[in-house]
Image (cartoon, rainbow, N blue to C red; front, side, top):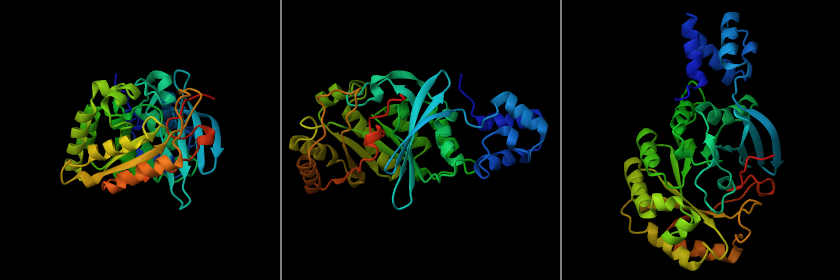
Length: 343
C-alpha cells in the first residue's frame, strides 16, 4: 500500500473534524516558519485538532529520530533511527561561501552491490517512505539551518524507490519546503525507467549518472546493474534526457588506483561522451577520489595526484567538461560511498 505523507494526513484530519481550510496553513507555518517540532506546542490551533493530530501522527512532527551526530571540518553526519529499528545516515555540507547542502538517503541499505560502496554491503533493508526521506531535511530546517540544495546521494539508489517522486513533490511544494527544482540533484547508477520518469515529471531536477568505468565488462564487475541496464542503453536515455530538458547531465566517476584511473580509461570516457550530437557539451564529468572503508575491499586504493592530473588533462584535451570533486568528511566516513548506517 502506498504510504500517505503526513501533510496529506493533516489535510484529511482537518476535513474529518470539519475544521476550516486555513488550519492547514497554520500548521504548515508552525512547522516551517516557527520551527515547532511537536503538535501539542501548536497553541494557535484548537485543542481538538491538536489531540487528533497526536492520536493519528504521534506528538513529534518528524517520523525519524536523531541518534548520534559526528562532526568534522565543514561536515556534519547524523545517524537517524527509522521505523523497524533500522538506521539511515544524512550528511550536511557547509561551504565557506555560506551555502548549506545536504546529502540524503532514499533507502535503508542498497540492493545493487556496487563493489566499492559501503552501503551496498548491507543489502537492501527497505525503501524509505516520503516522510522518512523529507524528514531528513525537516530535521535541519527545524534546527534553523537554511536548505540551499539537496542531493539524493546518500544511502540507496533513489530511482529504485518509487516514493522518491512523492518526496520530490513535497520538497518542491511552495507551501512546504519550497525548494527550487534546480537545487535538487538525483543520482542514479542507471535505472532506465526512473531516468525516464524523472525526465517526464521533474525535468528541471539535476541528474547525475554514476559511470565509474567506460568498459562494459569492468563496469559489470564493479556494478552488477550494468548487466540489467547496459551502459549503451543508459547513454541513449541520457542523450534523450538532455534533448528533452536542455539541462546538463553530470557523470560521476570514481577513481580507483590502477583500476579505473588509467590513461586508457580517460581516453575511453572521452570517446563515450564525444560524438553524441549537438548536445554533447551538456555532459559534465565529476571525478571522485575513492574513499576506503572497513566494509569495502582493501585492494581498492585512492589515485595519486599525478594519475588524477593526467586523467583530467586527457579529458580536457578531448573537449570534455571535467571537475575533480572536493572531498569532505572522509575522517568521519561521511564522504561518497562511505555511508553505512552504523553507530
